[in-house]
Length: 356
Image: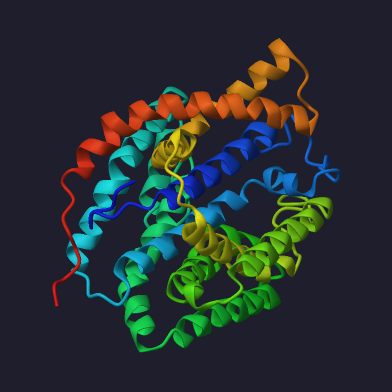
């Protein structure tokens, strides 16, 4: 998608498409209760599939992409913060408002509108917005910090490294005091700040690495290895319970951020293709925000329909195979959402980079 500065990075759209598919496949295969695929199934035969079995990691890829993109776009430039926030509102709010209204209508029909409205009011501070909207709250908190992060980066990138280290230590402290840090690490900026900042660091420093291919290979292998272990150990809901008392959640956001930061930097530098397939995947990336917010309306019903009316897909690999065409259909439907709801507002964006 073309930014308000006029720049377009097709490689990043590819990665948005991947992130959207990871989240979609996670919900298609497991929903929130291990249906139709039980959570205790793990894809030992093909370790990379552990990323699909723990597809919530797609959110981490989205977050790291955000940090990378803003650092890449802005570099060490000054921004007009009011126009920056206006642009982000034009990008995120129209579809989010539609989702809030639709879910509100459903809640009204079920007699649960009042508690729903309370959760919406809390959504500015708490991860309580519907259909994945909780992550928009986290993004908003990142936007509030972005001017300070850019200022620190201009002074020295070591400040950004210090923020990552400080976040890990803070989560360790929280775990020591409460016995669990999973909810903070996953649902709030306390965990996600690592991923935003590591994305920024990748944009600033990746070009300086000599053995870029080796770095990306090591990051990918490390991420797959970690998630193969994590998935076998119980995963998101079973390490050994939810919320997990495991110390793994102190460092998990950082592991994801480090790996995705290297992968994003490498793919952005390597991907040059503009053939039909590349452009098609890029379009899916453009529609990824619509896919992310709207798929919750249909993904669980789609998996149940296949499982009950077509064939048993309690096998993980069968479920993933069905998730692919379901995702393609979702992307096609979301093209309408993008063009009818998102794009009209994007035309009102203004440049927020100050001339120097």
